[in-house]
Length: 620
Image (cartoon, rainbow, N blue to C red; front, side):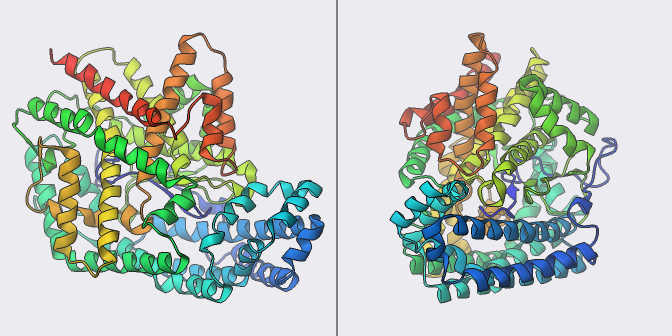
């Protein structure tokens, strides 16, 4: 994951979508202050940094092109060159983050869109100038590098980054081809991503006479009124059906673009490039997928059958899946209360964790309210180590929104801690990027549950958590299966919207089970999932992270129950500080966990089944 990438929230339908801007009064909410990056798009600081980045890239190319192998012979000169390359990455990352965040705050503003496009163009040119650097590093002989690591502590510092780079050696192309791929990215994948974003933001869905954007429409799928839920689902189906050709074209084009890249690079499986980026073995992902699929009946099928009974139905319609329980209290959390709940949960685990999280609220690092044109969903953007992360929410006060705040704040804490590794090694693989976010969410959930010992509110909290975990684990693995079907089929030819819809219904039916009826129009719901567009095969990282954290949290509870000291917290922070410098096996070893063990995934899923057991016992 490039340092400029966002860490996206989960499926919008389930992840706490925003409300209408004229919703309940939740008190003052923070908005971003991007001055820590740049004071304005036309500021002298931004202009100076762009010019400095262009000069640095040119100077690096003049000094180092064709000479890295010779520099490696001495060790220290190569370390100095990598240090200059890293400083350049920090500068361009800051510029790109500013343009991207400014655009996310109002994607409907043409000026912001143009500014983002212009910045991306200039950064692509800078990147082209230094594209040779990593390609040339990978051509250095292994024995030469080993000798250089031994003789130069400065170079040995960068060893994790260099070793990760070298894992891509079998898939590396000649520099001229790599440069072509890089330069055309703006008019290929990036352009189609932008089209998807701007189209999604501009769409309007008519529900009971109101024309709503995607966020408030998705939010209605959690409305207490079945009529409202149905109306929202039908509006989604209608609009995406009317725009099916466009979303089909975007999907076909991006899948073909990926197939071309994969074929040229020599990747065997459609998801292998993602596994490489995630530093996870294909066998580990396959074990996760098969374990989760094997638990569909015990988790999703069982839970939705219970929920149908709670709602007085033989079957749930697809718009009932995230409906509140009939007796669920209408509990809303004002912003200040949500802040207190999350920081309190973090502080109970470790005062240090709350201390790291506090500046996000105090210094304008969070953009919380819903606004017209604002990017949907939620994310935490790491920016660069010389600055700090920024969090985007669409906060509306429901318990799920509190969980989303805890989730994204966990990302933020992780990104702050990992920043010590520097621009090249702070980025965390997606499989591990969810560790702190899901852990923070679990801490907050447990804190809320402790305050609710019994009654309808406890049942609603448990049910909400089970649904979130189903959406994080079962749904995301189903999404992964869907993506595999689409990308494999696209290799044989272009797909129609109807074909893609049939694949969607097949995997959703398998995962959700017989208690959920997928009514007319649901075959179009794949159209709005941003992960399929922005980061192919991203989705399994959520299931990986959730199961990992469930196992990790079990270790925490076991040690706390045995009167353990603060050693777990210290090991946990060390894991987060590692950023991208260690493999998942190294990070999990201090906790006695191993993702290659089949029981690891089953242990993580058992936490969900135990929560369903407790819900079932409440009905007796």
